[in-house]
Image (cartoon, rainbow, N blue to C red; front, side):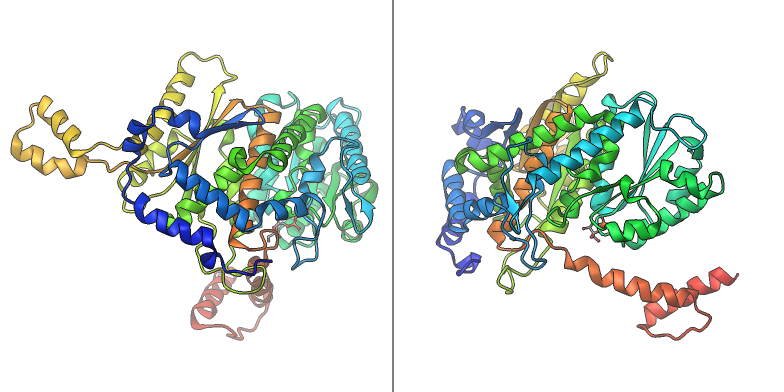
Length: 550
Ligand code: F6P
């Protein structure tokens, strides 16, 4: 708990003063003055490289930001997290997703006097065994055919991680297996997946930490009803398995708890891809690749835990984000993965970052007093370039961007990768440099444009530049590098939450809508029209009821 408000800390105030100067800098000049800026402002960890030189920072900025991290107790909170303390105090829970990826025997952390390492290893053993049996064809459907399709039914953290990772590791997929994801309660989602799979060869994973989530339970019930139009009750066990912390609800749903893969309340939903929630990943890419994915995350954990703040990749990334958010007032952060298989990474980060740090109250119950999590959004490069990059280059808001690029492709199609990387690097250069009026004028004169036209075009063709970005490079997109990349963002999120003084591990904000949806669901089904809400909500309910009756 902090005793001083963030804005009253000496480090924050020093940064405010420093910003008064820094606001006048242009990165073009910083690069011109510092030929070694890349060496000074890039860091390597767990095989990844973070280039943060294209930010509006100098070495003074970084040391002031480091002081802020120290003054806000980032290191102590980090150690408390790794040590199994119940830092998610609003839910009285430890935060130990890092224990899920610690090597066997290396995890000594306890929760309520109980070692967590042996439980983690036991579940991993179950996953290894089950994934092996499905992949090698021993586990078969009710008519004796091999499993060909895996349907993960889950939402939020029980969906976004598995879908993102299965897509990213597409190259490692078993030739016979396809992974599908049903998350939305909109029946079109389930309908579309069911129309593509065969009940005889489909394995459903009902993935829900609580096993009470309305969307998942309804999708699971409907999937079971669909299955029972083909197979029998006794066949369900071969086709439905569960991943949950709630054995009672799993049994009540009718899934044999022998086919349940448990995890624990100290794993937050948005941090659960490393747990049995990753079962679809282990099935698709194999247990060895799933282990490599965990190992990549563990390598980043060790770096985060052991490296001094000044060379600590997640800490640096977090502090750059704080600088942009709290001193330059950037309202959003755009994620631009230059790899087609990382197309779900922005959506994954939306939950990770916004559900963690979309908070306005500090750990001591008072308003934070500064802006917290920016909006996270984005799309793969080069697609985004032809959609929203115009605004990023010349719009009125300055939006920082994380470029994520992979050096080596796995396809052998000539030239594409060079063009892809050229675009990625060119964009970050353009955002940084811009194009000033002198350059635009010289260009137009070279093209023979007359003076009147030139003066009219000049302001439209000028780019201010000085727009910040990070570039993260992965040598290749492998299970290990992907694990490291996700863990990097997890720890970045953690550090920012620690600086803002908020609890990054609860999510009370999603509850109100869930409760109201239950009430309205009842009203939609009822005969009467009690008009219990505001005029807008009452009218919308009435229209939906009319449409049902029509
Ligand atoms: O509503 C938000 C949330 O609780 C997320 O935090 C979680 O990942 C998601 O719902 C799904 O929850 P569950 O895994 O319990 O179904």
